Image 1 (cartoon, rainbow, N blue to C red):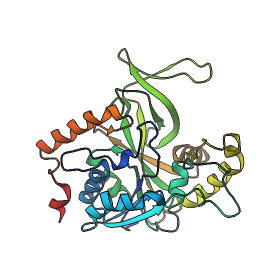
Image 2: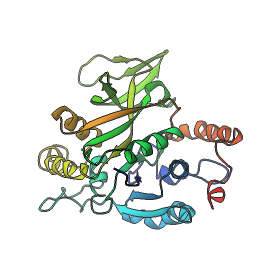
Image 3: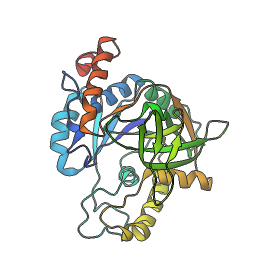
Image 4: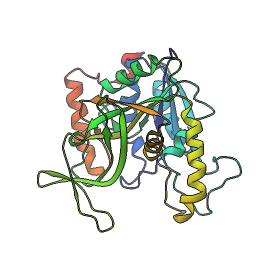
Length: 310
């Protein structure tokens, strides 16, 4: 397509399992958050613009602690994920506090993001290479490739927490490297040398191979995805949300799986060899901090990210 892709970071979650706004928690001696590392890697890969999806009430903290640090080298924007922001003539049930999910978060970008874009979570460290892979894929798309998307595919054994279960999108691909399906497993853990997806509703535990491809919510999209997401969000609000009005969520991977199954979109899976790091639980932080310190020592990152970029 030739258009410069932009970076979109989902940072509106409440972080309930972590115990607070983990997106704002510093992870190294320089006071950087995982978001800083994400934007730094994206900048090195060629991205020049970032959109933070946040809750409006958190904008002051996000700007002070994160956005203001990188404004000298990135075009920084904010998008609000609010419960009142839904398709026309629809509304969410009274008493709902929790955000409506990742699919809703990306739909909230529809009026601001006009070029191909990469989506990531705010609380994940993806490594250096995926940003370059995504950037090169999106910028190289032909003009008639509106529904040609991409997903960073991680090895399952490089995405686990030592301190509890994690949710991962288990992916099936075809021989050409395109996504065939994605199945969200909400309780995956490593135990006794094996990786299990814990049983749901009287099913047996599923043993997963360490090299299983999983989604970590790093996607590459073109703007036409917003129309698909609007249809899906309307369907979710009308049919699924009433069944569990306070907790059910409109998940991005589930909607992409539906589009792939229907043949409405094609998703190229870009294999990632690097180790993922994240802070699903507070106990994960020391491991992440140690890993970042090691990478600084190896010269992968400077001690002060944004001083180098100025």
